[in-house]
View 1 (cartoon, rainbow, N blue to C red):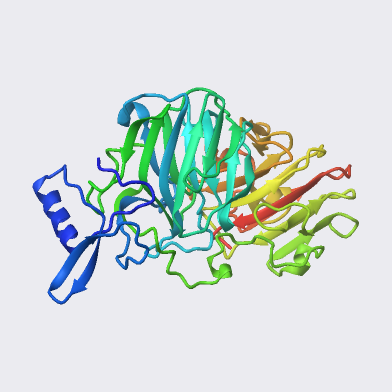
View 2 (cartoon, rainbow, N blue to C red):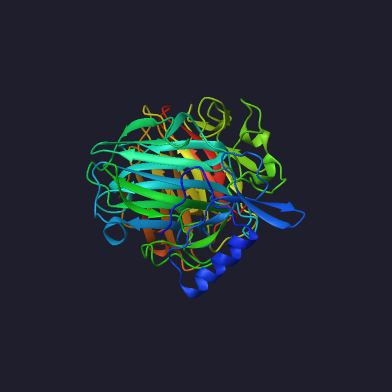
Length: 474
């Protein structure tokens, strides 16, 4: 596959476009183009080398991989399995580089409200579950970049940022026990960070969204190069592909919604929407006054059991992405509740929220969907204490094997179908699927609201923070 030198994009003039079309039709696979600019003269069009000129008016476009997430049961992904596509099956010490771009898909029909727009570049070792991650770089909202640490938690990287719509010259390097990354082509690196799985890398994945929601964004990837101790073992510039064709195959069959499309890495999104209009979450609590009860700050929220000292208020002590969050504290003998109604009954849907529980908590924090705040109103409930699990009133509560930990932000997602099957995800990874809600001994009524609460009726030791509530059901 032909490869464009880093930092320069192929520019298709009219002559080059015709030649390229002919090459694709008649099977010429060794065609190369010199980067040129087209200028009009009195006698017609003249082709000249651009050299280092910065005044070229030709639009910089070329073919690359466009990754979308329009499915509700799978995320968008371009997956490279080294044993199938590279000249080696595993890499102990290596590097991957690519030009990437995360931006709104102007052709998308998916509502931006509730859209799952996080992108990931993931290095997997012995398997492709979260516990097999050798390294994970996460491009979250508001230009925030995170790394996944050895416990599985997502940690915001100080000083690492990106701008939606702008090209990112991404590089990740790794050895047996650590990984690092750069977003400026290798000039500045962040890390090294300890790996979860300290074995050789076997799979490299570019991913958008998650397995329970949809995204109105596109994650564009181009000029992928993988090296094993400095030796190139895989490269793809996508310029030998045909526009609009699927990339599965030749890429691994676990890839999803990845196609070859024309790229324009010089132009940001054409959207003129305001920050509020492009906000990807239902409520990030940034517009409220710190210290106000959430039910006073917003008529969308209601509270219970906060009169005697417990609180459900806007806080600036913890936040995941901005500066504010919803804070619940059990300061008396009753659990504080905060809840928000859906726009209607929801036979199927999903809700996600970021949650932070302090290490000194000794009781449980709860997240549920149902028809009210009482136990008899719960359709499905996630429980967070020293671990993550869910309520089963028939056979006893279920504890899940996850990477949940206190003193860290985690994203919890509850998704349910009209067949009463529930899936629970933690930080974008499904940790329990197709739970039969009818066997849990909870309410069979169709959910109409989202509820969070913490603590119990006999102690004053629990608190929790919630941020980035996200669903299209509100």
